[in-house]
Amino acid sequence: MARRDPDKGGRASVGSSDPSTLPKLGALEARVMEALWGRGGWSTPGEVVEMLNPERDVAYTTVMTILVRLWRKGLLERRKDGRAYAYHPVQSREEWTAHRMSEVLAIADNRAEALSRFVDSMEPSDVNQLRRLLRITR
Image (cartoon, rainbow, N blue to C red):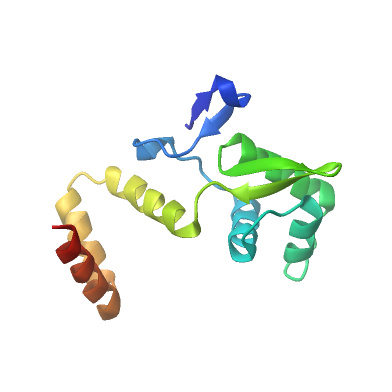
């Protein structure tokens, strides 16, 4: 479960060093996050509805509910934009992905074996990129 920060109205705090504190995403929450990451910048509920509706018929009130849930989970920032709020992801898609990978690795009994199998499943270009990154960080 995500850590709660009383100074943020009970919202969860993302960015903990403990990957098990990352909130889980439902299917529609994941679609909303993808839309927000894809657009960049700040988005109102109406703009999110427009982004989602080519793929799925989603009501404005449903999107508002999902945005508030994501904000409470600590995944979104929000600010007033006229009468509505505008929302923005706290983390980039890549930061979120890295945290999810850490979370999955944390549950492995044998981390070395899990990492080995993960690298074996990677595309050769990704393996080469990983090698370059490891050389840089040493």
